Length: 206
Image 1 (tube, rainbow, N blue to C red):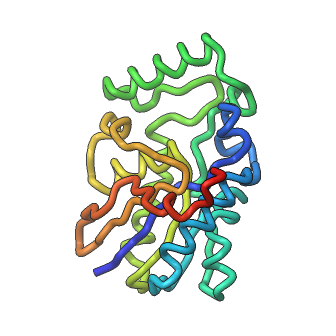
Image 2 (image 1 turned 90 degrees about the vertical axis):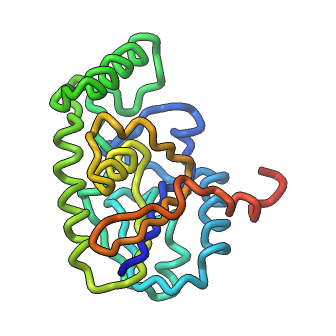
């Protein structure tokens, strides 16, 4: 049996400004994001993690750096990078962008998983690379693992872990540093979903 703690990265300035990041924007955590990461570390620093797995993007690295600095083995996986949002990356939301996004979500809900925004990834492509990561999780020898990924990637990852249709991914929330605790005993079972109880450890200024 394995215990796998999967969190989204802490807040970035792009998140705060509602600018799309995707896999092409390698942003840093904001002051709030660093406080979220610190609070998560304070709450879970005594969990006997045996490995830390992140995407290739530094906002995930910065989120779990407290655990890495304890000397835990750290591996980076491009498979859990955020989805590519194509031409929309680095841009603020506009009415047209919101309309494009709604069309994409509607297409995916209708099972059109090859639908994509301009020069972006499709749901099918995202799920294919996340499945590679899941197969790695199943085979790993460690019993307690911490992984850090991204919002849309995590939505899709949860559907893959539960062996659900990709059209179900929209039901999964993803707060910054929100925790999904997953048990693997041949199948994946969820103990916590988007848990942010560690926010209570953040300074009142936030």
